[in-house]
Image 1: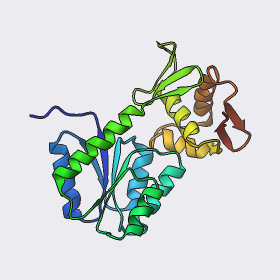
Image 2 (image 1 turned 90 degrees about the horizontal axis):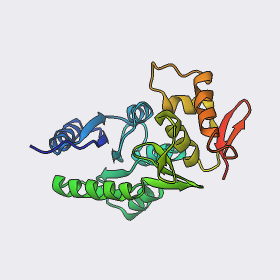
Image 3 (image 1 turned 180 degrees about the vertical axis):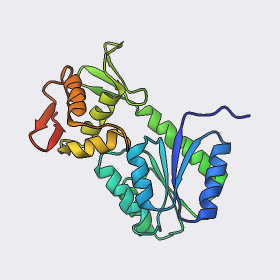
Length: 221
């Protein structure tokens, strides 16, 4: 029996049979899998849960997979993404990568090849998981902050907030968006709770965390 990997994949595919096929195959390979049939459901799921990889169809009801990924990237979501599509034209291939795709496979999909591509994308992601922020080092996978190799006293929720601000690249992230991204539906997400995590981060990044009064926060280099 395969050792289960701590990797969670979101599959967005509107063909129910293929959706179920992907789910069964990936779970058999040891991955945790969540599925969606339309982009609105996938977007909502991405706000409630952190995924390690997205597998997105392109031709979908309501809007295509390219537009969905563009929304996610604009919100600071850098989750690796592979498109699975029946489109064969080069313009679609180019658009997929321009919108932020990490890989692109044409249907019909060879599942063994898909597995290899997933593994390759995840390996590339692992190499990018340790980033430097001034004198600090941040392990984005473990959500741990280090100084000179020593773990700093920062909660995982505060690290998630830090990453969200950094990924926005200087743009203001509204308080409402922060709360929707960091707290699942039904969880308490008050302004007071948000300020607790902002205060925690300012102990380490006093000059970088900027409060835009009445709007939200941004990261200043």
